[in-house]
Length: 302
Ligand SMILES: NC(=O)C1=CN([C@@H]2O[C@H](COP(=O)(O)OP(=O)(O)OC[C@H]3O[C@@H](n4cnc5c(N)ncnc54)[C@H](O)[C@@H]3O)[C@@H](O)[C@H]2O)C=CC1
Ligand SMILES: O=CCc1c[nH]c2ccccc12
Image (cartoon, rainbow, N blue to C red; front, side):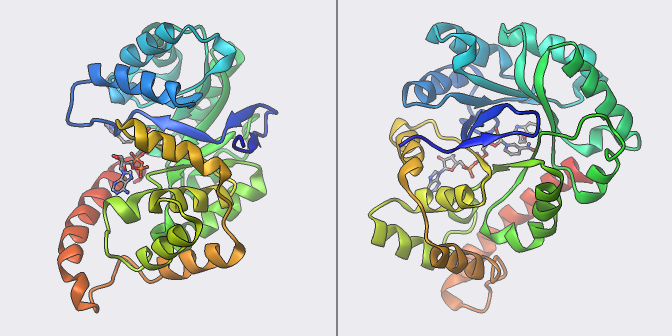
């Protein structure tokens, strides 16, 4: 069964699961991204997420060319990351050159940090890119409610807000999710597997592993199915074909309301789980990772 279609506020349909190239093989050279993209497409991904700052648009573009897919068969997102102080009008041309494309499906402001204090002006430049036909849809990433409010007078409402979303940040992110829903801005969820990758042993594990066992699926599939239950686009990654196949299998996994509530109730308890002795070791690791994630997120968002 295919993933559900997600309709954006500009009428376009975005594939509900995307292969992220920002983190795959992060310690390896960008050349490996080429092979990873080919593997992802081979197992059924038709949506690739890249960015100016990832430094791999060339490799993504080479892989896309090799697949022989027609342009309409693949969704490509890239982001204006403000590298070398380029503005959207120049940056999109550089990105398209590297990708070997005449347009991207979705172009995002990677972070509001890049546009402050003139968030509206940066967005108007994105609108120009859209008007020129170089990006079929435009959106933002890492925008808070206050950042989005600055765009309220703009001609175009962002089609998406690409944000960190997993059960441990769900409660804190709920007001932003509600605001976006009210404005017709779809959510793209990045780093959905953080409970497994950064906080193993945390409170979310209990319901996630129990649901996984009941359904006969893998825990990462349960976390991705939870994102799916929110009607958000899933952005995930792996260099391993078996993992990518499992991610694709999430199309057939639907959680019950009770499952969703159990995951959210556990998510609200973490990641501050020091009181459990057996969690002390993961906590130390978790805090270190959390500090790094917060530092990085702070860099992007504030
Ligand atoms: N706009 C932005 O600021 C950001 C965008 N992104 C985008 O989102 C994409 C996905 O982000 P990620 O953080 O990579 O997503 P993710 O949370 O899905 O993590 C993927 C990682 O989890 C690992 N994994 C899978 N199953 C696992 C398991 N059972 N146990 C332990 N590890 C497991 C994979 O091997 C892979 O390394 C990025 O590649 C990028 O394209 C990511 C971060 C920030
Ligand atoms: O998109 C966010 C995560 C990310 C992956 N690679 C880089 C490089 C520079 C800034 C952010 C990121």
